[in-house]
Length: 99
Length: 504
Image (cartoon, rainbow over all chains, first blue to last red):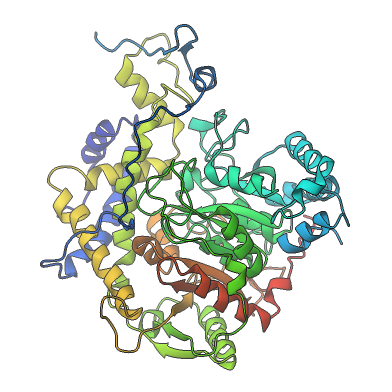
């Protein structure tokens, strides 16, 4: 497993995560993520043969409910937090999606 | 009395009309005005909202006669939604976010008479162990102003320690209630996963997050939990478990209880003064009739790597919602240019998030990506199972240990509060501060930190620093850890110690 992280690795990850990074951040994160993953490699020492993964510790119970319309948030209140909203008919506006 | 020492004193005084809710509120606001410039515990203080709420309680005081929190000033960590009151998660990306709804815990606490006075500083999106990762500057430890209060609920812990309010809410994903409670000398309780609704908590690690109280006494934590706990239709992971009156468990009687100490994992890396304080705490509980035994937690050494892989994976998914479209801040187009949707996302997130949040999003993205998923994420989830089994074994569940324990005791943090700036440049060193707290989150177990002494060496001009004892219990058995913590508190005076808070 790679514990060395390059600038290019970080740039590729940042693109996947939709994060614009400064050039100085690429170097910093390459070093820090490498350190963290090298430490995480200690896990390889644990014998997990036949051990099931734990994804959640929720007590199993039914959460089914009747399909009834419930009150929801007021549209005006919700749009009030948007950086660019059209009050009528109630839309979020975004930059162009297709060239 | 100033009505701010404890939840119980405050609400008793308000209910008996010895003091009005408005006077309690004014006292809290005055104290905040005096102390806040030195510790920066708050992102927002809302005087008008708080006073209006207190006035409404006074106007109809008979209706609040049975309210468990009548007139009690409440500080809310700034990652818990409060309707109409700015909620930033200490992030630029939410600097102007005003929630259109209340978190379920806020609705419950206000219905019980609590008065929200402000929103507490924290690490950005609760990611950190020192409250230094706040976009609005660090909080200072009231016991030593050059030290961090711990984190991520550092503002909440500092506010309670400085007696700005008797009750604060924190959130705990890997220790973020207990560790700052320990470092600020107050009580911090992380309930069982599912015990308290997470509706309205800005999600970080959805399989780990819990909301809990920070208080000056164990009894106050029991009062708060009794109000906060319970199933909520708005949170599918909240548990339909019976909610007892947790104060009824505080009998002082720990005779026959077995307390396990994982001595082997305390052998290295723990500050000798911290270890000494915890050892003396065990002697106090033994004096009350509890039995102290050794327990083995063989996989505890993997808890930090498991936690930082699982929590970052969940965070990378949860934080995808901050994209500059529906709420929060949006970056401008590049100078003189335009941007398309994807470029807008990347600019907004790149400029809106701080370094630790970006680091964790990228780490989580990496461990979930094809090719690394099995080696990191799946492996971490498997080791999470082993850590969970260690605890079940110790607690005698599923036909485990022959002589099970009722509670597991260890330090909350391996050291007392560290200096501001000391670990900020080295994320891995910062992560190690959570070595004793993350397991309770991985296992969904309840755990409490209770003050158990001070370091003797004056680490700062102000003197010694608080040390916390952590007690972990079986799932949904908060009653037992509260009982043990309260019994310990009865024989010690740490809960009555207050920081001197010298003027700078």
